[in-house]
Image (tube, rainbow, N blue to C red):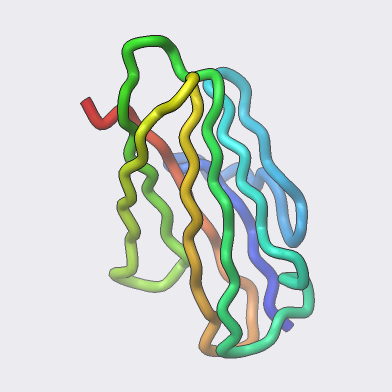
Amino acid sequence: EISTFVYAAGSTDELASDSLSVRIAGPSLVVTPPPGLTNGSINTEYTFTLNVTDLPSGVDNVIFLSTFDFPNEINLNSSSVVDGQAAITVSTSYPTDGSFGFVWGVRDAG
């Protein structure tokens, strides 16, 4: 069985697990795990969507940081901001059974 837990970068508070979306107040970052992640399969690719909303005016680009609890595997993706929103998708596959963390963050790229 594969399960994923979602944490905000710099925090040890679990925000969601399995197939829940996460919304953080002010700008809001919504993380949507893929369907079927609960009881997932080894070596199957799963795609997560990260969407940040309510960004202040003047923020033109953001950088998303994400890691799937594998050593030395930190993903940095930039995205343009349109109407106060930006989004990316990130994918991973899990090499073994177990519980895996998913840590994410977003910052102004300016």
